[in-house]
Length: 143
Image 1 (cartoon, helix red, strand yellow):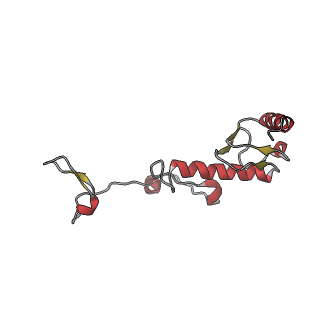
Image 2 (cartoon, rainbow, N blue to C red):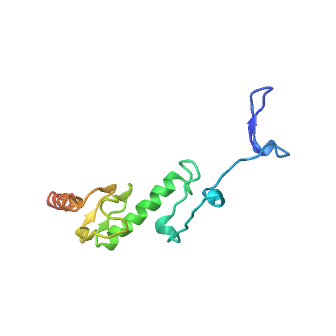
């Protein structure tokens, strides 16, 4: 059942008003090409660290660009926390560039730091900059 425009008056005929199927939904998945492939490989990964589907429109709470960004942010927050940093609660995402770390390694420079959201770590020198900002905030009473 597919909503459509009534050609007689231009109104939308909603799915709920349809009694019978009126079309065919054509949909493909990445695994549909497997039988046509000359060579194929599959990987088994930790879903929470390696997979976040994006199949719904922005604004949808699941399987959307928004939920994928949040999952990515949660993963990177976990990496920084595991390295010894604390991240203040609040609005904004946390991202660690792949130039800095691919799986949470090499973030020891953030040990003992309190970081503010939103946060984008683009290079190893970000730790020094974050430390300077944290120190400056502590000096002026803001931290």
